[in-house]
Length: 268
Image 1 (spheres, rainbow, N blue to C red):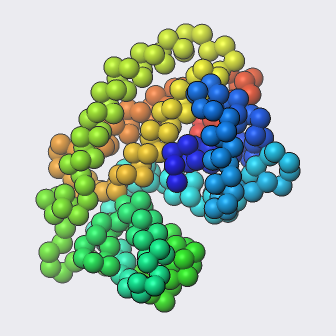
Image 2 (image 1 turned 120 degrees about the horizontal axis):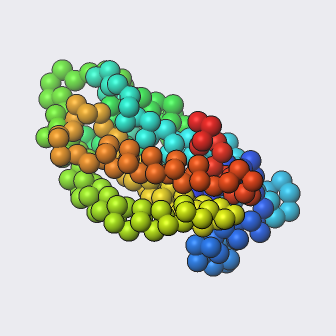
C-alpha cells in the first residue's frame, strides 16, 4: 500500500467516513492532484479497505480498521516490557501459491518479523492474532505453524539482531529524518503555529509528520531495548516527533472542520 493510501485510510477512519470533496480539498493543499486522490480511493475500495454506503462518501471496513490498528499499535511497543518470549512462524507454501506466499512474507516483515531461516520468521512480540488473520485472508492456514516460547540455544543478541533486521540501515534513516525534522520541519511549522487561522495549514503539516511516523513505524520492527545497542535512534526519534505531532493537533482550533480528524488522537 502506498503512503498516500495509508494516510487516506487514517483520515477516513478518524472522521467515521468522509466525502470525496473534502479529501480532494485536503490533498489540494498538499499539491496532490484530484485524479491521484480518486485513483487511491479506487485502489482502497478494490482491496476492501473502504466501502461507499453513500454516493461520493467513504467509510472504513473491518479489514481497513485492522490495518490502521496494526500501524497504530507498533509505536506503543516502545514502552512495553518484553517477557523474553518469542513468536515463531513457520510456513511451507507450494510454488503454485507463490503470490500468496510472497504476500504473507511481506505482511510478516511489515509487522516486524525477522527471517531466521527459509520459511521461519521470529518476533519478540505476540502477533499471533494478526498472523492468523493473514493466514485466513490468504487461505494458507494449512501451510502455517505458530510457536511461542524461549530459545534454548543461540538466542538472538543485539549483534545477531543486526543480522536478522536491517537495523543499521534503519538507524541511518532515523538520523536523516531527525535532522530534517529539527532543521526544516519544526522551524516552518512553528511559524504556522503563530497564526493558526482555520487550521488547514497546520493540519497539512500534521498529515506530513503523521505520514512520516507511519512509514517509520512500518519499517521498524520495534525491538525491545534488550535487543538494541546504545546507538539506536528509533526511540528518541519517535518520542520527539510524537510530542510535536500532538502539539500540531492541539493547535488546530476546535471550531475548525479539520479538528475532527485529530480529536481521537488528543482524546487518546
